[in-house]
Length: 324
Image (cartoon, rainbow, N blue to C red):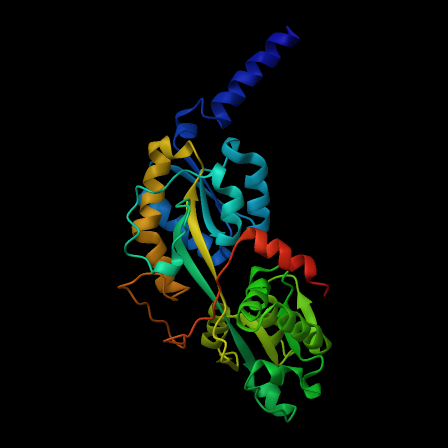
């Protein structure tokens, strides 16, 4: 009798929570590394567009998402990956569906993934952000180049994300390696570390420190700095001669999941409509050839840094040398 009840319970659980039910067959699970406010917008739009589907958007940091997909592979519960950093794609390409059938002619050439495993979704640019009020209070001049950040008067007043835990931190490291050469770039960050208040664990850390008045200069995300400026924070965005470093992010489907109609429908809507809506609202930096987005206080005609050789192997090699 006890064994019979266990079997019945297992059957009921199957019908309640798995693809044994109609709901399960129409469930689409998205792993997203986008900010929570963006995830909320994406989920609301998807539910509006596809009321017949049960859509779940689960947040996890990029590194965590990549590590999980690397372990789970094609057996992952994930159907669609959103906001996946390109640096991880080469390690995950065996788990991703082939997207070569999709027309990518609308995208900027430098946003394309050579393996055609993800479609462009976001360019996340970096800037030098300063708190102009705190700078004036302390009687300090605005920096004009990276070398200025080494001045002793900025000691303990600069915030930067740690490249080992933050894609934003890594893009600053990589941009200077490409611009100056590896030896000079690492020597520079060794010197800069003496002026760093804190190497933050996330890319949002520097702007948070600026808003709180703990730092006066931050190696920061442009999008986040603009959002705080529009909220009234006394921040200013600057770019140095080397240009704005940036990371590229894309959307993809897990191999085999692309054969499910509900997954294909959601992915296609992301690609054709929702990615553009997200850019218009939150991250307007250029990913399309013929479409430009404008946002209040967002810089235009941004000069981008050289971010070539942006591979997982190169990232791992450079981070092995990072000691801070």
